[in-house]
Length: 521
Image (cartoon, rainbow, N blue to C red; front, side):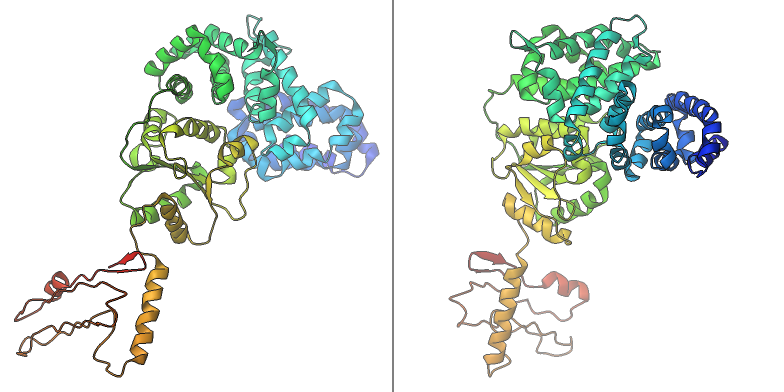
């Protein structure tokens, strides 16, 4: 693998066009081999380990790639697309700005007018896009590519081996699942209607009914297993839109199978679809009285922020806080624990970040949260907390769900952010800092104005007397001048022959007062 990489790298970075043309057939053969090898998901980790992610991006930027794009362009972009099917490789490609680098070659690819190259290019863009803005710039290309993917799925489904033009159904569904993260794509595909019903929804539900037996097979064929996996993800995305969920529910056979599988399998996607169905059919149920509880929704990449934020929340509110890492072992089978806590939460706090906005799983969780919000207070039922400076949602689908919700802006002070959240919810139990500051200023001003320094306004002095001093008495100091502004109650410690550090702490006086509607201790 390393030798192949070095050979191609030397060729593409060579300035001698004559030499480059002579060895072009060899390079083409090697690239064809790499294309076929990267199609095997099990060995993509090898390509990651030897640095192909960085190199393939460099190759696209070379002049020789541009001059011979008609020969090697489709091969190299296919390698990029194959690498996107691995989560680790996809993350590295995005880190290397692969989407932007491919966009630099957009006009060059358009000029080739090669349908195969254009399709591969569209597949790669769909897989790499992380925001609506990126996909909006290529809206026509992505819509056309998605439409062809959908039609190819329907053709593949007719084949006994589930393959069409060299592509297995699982690969087509996987890419279509990614395309559906764009709201305009899913609406475009599902708008094909007959008698007001989407033919696409009918197709996907019926396809599942023909393939779901794979989920019950103890030794399923791997590609069929992947096909059902991505088909479920597509159905979950469809069921996250109330207008499409209605038609899904009308397929009674589908609902019965989903309910049965949700009870038998540890499959989050199946359980999520079933929860969406249940929530839709129970929309007319009256609100129930619930004990106060906060549910935290966050992306796993923000777990450190989440832990610190939750710690600060605990200091400020007696309300129970449910966050997954405190209650269940993190795994792929968590929805059966998460969903009932979403339903029973009186407040949901969304820790919003770029990663949260890009996550399909988080969009689906958020859709479920919104669907259950009928039982919460409209103003404080959902609070959005930005975990990044100048945060904005990259996906309109997520932004549309949260556009009217209370947003707590990011500060470089999680302590203060947690305090702001508690104020919004109305459960702040710790006194406001500004109230303490106001009292302190009042005390200092009073002290400066007083001629008698043994009397202090709005507080009291506790003097410890040695145990052999007969004056073991605590004097009570109380300012009548401040009684109109602060209602203060004090108690006198009982006489004692000796005070250890423990007994002093135990006998400390609690002083409570109220100033301008705020309570301090």
